[in-house]
Length: 217
Image (tube, rainbow, N blue to C red; front, top):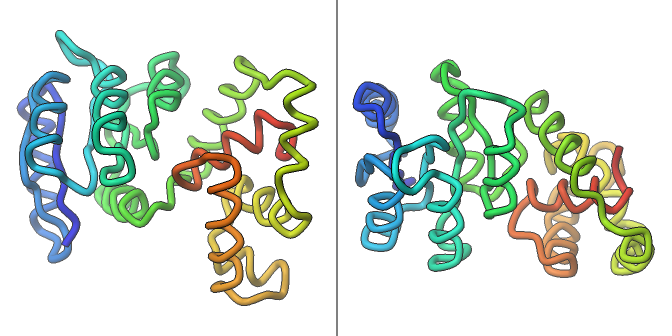
């Protein structure tokens, strides 16, 4: 069972999302937060698997709430940012704070459910169109210095670089395996190794690292 905390200042958004999630057998809503303060409080108390985090809330916004939740709970919780705008400095701030994925408000039910399940499983790269645009712009605005880029590439084996590049193109483990003629379990093994080497929490953070260090474009 995937335990979800909803953080949004709009009652109708919280209620609508709860109805969608509670209709699924593998999802349950463990709490609803009205602002960033409650989001941090409830996440710490309830320990959800995923927090659906609105960005723009009164008081403490979703970026600061995300930063505090990740700092406190680490890999025990994933934050799925829910935003109105697909290219927004708020989104970049949330990415830096440790968000694992992005979801546009107004997405259909299937997209919402897929996003939550993907984030819970550690597959941070979600909607290909949105995520690629956000990551590309993020990397452009915050490039890694050339000296650091050169040393970064030396951290990985050639196979890990291949997997990272394909991951950054939005491919799943199974698709990467088919492209490289290896087993999905082998992809998973190499992925776990490269995440540890570059200090990334999930696939989204790994893709960001790849773009910033010139391994993906």
